[in-house]
Structures are given as structure tokens and as C-alpha cells.
Image (cartoon, rainbow, N blue to C red; front, top):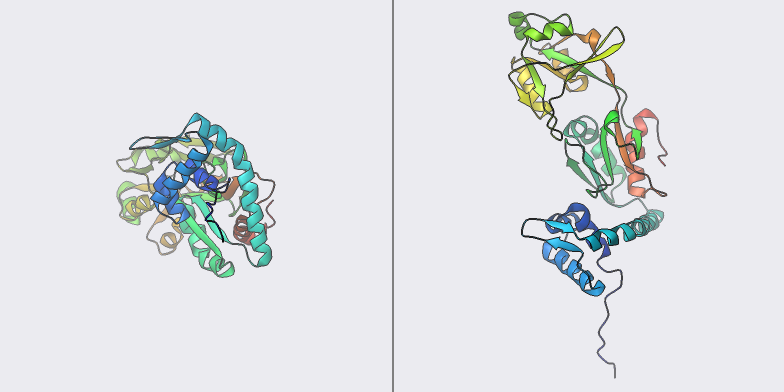
Length: 309
């Protein structure tokens, strides 16, 4: 006769859940990420804490933060969990195609210009990969946020990241409606902007008003322009320019159609500097997860840059 035996919990049970909560800083966000209930996440973490005999998180009604023991524990297990995760992904990829949830942190601008238009092709090519696009105009820490990669303009990348270009160099255009220029005049040099209403942009992360950039006789210069409108969203700044409310400095790619149909007019084009293009970046690893390799290689195809390390 068989005895009723109690199965002991696996020693590794709950480690990935613990890491997800630690990275996202929330049981609710971790539950959404893992596709389970917040109660299940909480029970998993409590079970792990009970087996270890130590509190891993300090909890209040408003926030969850790693305890000192939790921080030390995460630092010790994180590299091993990465290797296990990659090994499982590689095994699945060997049996078919890359799979799993791919979390990308990117600005709204790059999502609209370079990612959303190509997503149908990527999803059709890799039907077992899920893609979560987290649009964020701050310079987020992709590691702390639990993201596989981020996409930003080249000069805004952290130095300890691997980065691959997904676009060519970028240019900004200073634009206004023909009617605005008839009423207020057309600036011929950057100094002429002093007499104009300039639609300004406040950086969502730093809160700093972004200066306008120019090149004059090979010398780069930045100018703090003045105006009555300030936005933290490029799309709203573009709409304000279309409504004739002032001059705006916007990426050329976002106003191509408006320039082509004459709705907006470009000024000071000869002073426009070239900016680094957009890059996809991710932490340096000994082995890249197959799902991320597939995405990086796909985005780099138009530039002929595949085989990311």
C-alpha cells in the first residue's frame, strides 16, 4: 500500500518570481509580466522567504523594496538565472524557432517611426515570440526594469551596453506653417529666432528644456530659444506647429509628409546638425538569448548589420 508522502518544494522554486518582483519593484507588475495573479506571486515569494528563513523584501502599503539580504541574494543568483534562462531558450530554439516574451523599452518616437511599421513582418517570421513594447521617453535603466533591450538615440546610451544601429544619422528640421512665416517673417540665421515664438520641448526624464542645436561654419552651437508653448510630447509639438502656433524643431522623418504637401515649411536647413541614429542596446552577456538575437538581427537588416554578439 502506497503511503501519502508530502512532496517538498523544489529548492529553486520561486527564484525567477523573486527576481521579477525585484526588477519591477511591484508584485502587481510582476504578476502582469508573468501572466499570473498577484496573490500567486506573493505566495511564491513568501514560500521562498520561509525556506530561506530571511525576509527578502521590505513591504509597505505603497511600495516594495529589496531588503539588504534580498539585494545580496539577487546579486548572487542573477547571473545563474540568466544562464539557465538562455539555456532553456536555446534548447527551445534548437527544436524550432526562438520563443518567449521579449520586453523592449523605447521612446514613443522610435516606436512610431521604426518599430511599429515593421512589427507585422517580425511577428509573422517568429510566431513563438511575444513582444512587449514599453514606451518611455525617459532614459530608463533597462536592467533594473527587467527589459531585454532598449532603443534610444546613440549619444544617450550608457557606456556599459552593447549597442547596434537600427537607423542612419538623424536630422532635425525647424518648421512652421506658411501663414506663420507670412505674419512673423522667415528667420535667416539662428540669431533671428529671438523674435519668434518657438515651441519648446521639456525632457520627461530630467525636466530640462531641450536647447535647439545648430552648426555654423563647422562649429556646433546650442541655443535656448523662447516661446509660449512647452510640450513633453513630440506629436503635440508637431500639431502645434501645424496649427500655426510657432516654429518647432522636429525630426525630419516625422514631418516629411507635411513638408511634401506644403503644410509646413522648413527654415534654417543649412544650419541643421547631423545626429547619431537610433540604436538598440542591451547588457553585455556571454550568450545572447535567441529571442533577442532574432529581434536585433531583424532590426539591423535594412542597414546590412546582422550577427549581433
